[in-house]
Length: 271
Image (cartoon, rainbow, N blue to C red; front, side):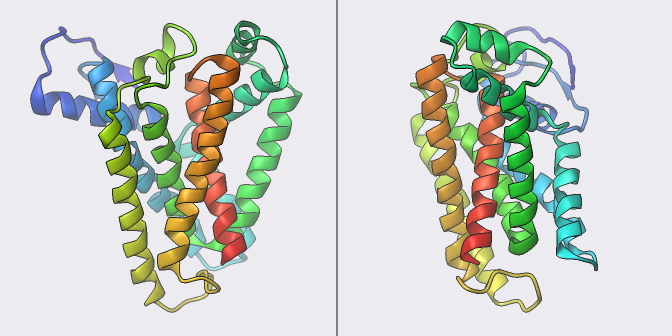
């Protein structure tokens, strides 16, 4: 992500919103963007539009699932595409958080462990289990589940950045985005996403084709999976706050992967 600093008062109104959108794309995807201004206002906008970025990522990543071939192969390719599109940053955050929490060390030492570039045994185990779970669940759940999972993963960022959730340490991504989402907005954005998931499910229920969840109507399954994914992510957030004192960039990445995996697992099991 290419960043160019601007003066503190140079990006009011619509320009500030565009900076937030560009910042979201730069932080959450592999696509290079040029951001005129990076501050907490832009960071707050970036967190609000993060679910829309997730929608874009899911739409691209689900393309391998639509190709002819074994569902398992399509799931592997889809998960791989998603990892490439996000530069693997969320997976890296998940591994780092697993190492930090798994160390059993006090908060300061755990945060130091998370800052290291290497991955320890807890991180490796967590990555392996998570990726296996994502692939296996996606092979059974299909493209609707993947798009919903990608949106839900970024919805977790909205909730993690509401007031009352502090940064674990000064500096870094956590301190820039912590507390930037207003409480009312933290409720409105997930509510809108749930309504969109239900609408998408209604449209999907009217389509025929192999690989679509059938045991539970999509109009019910997708919103329920979204709630479950957010719930699991919020439990992890609570654990991170109690052990580390707040959020970091690694915590945010771990929340994305946790919510994503939760949605896929629920869709696979209920579908």
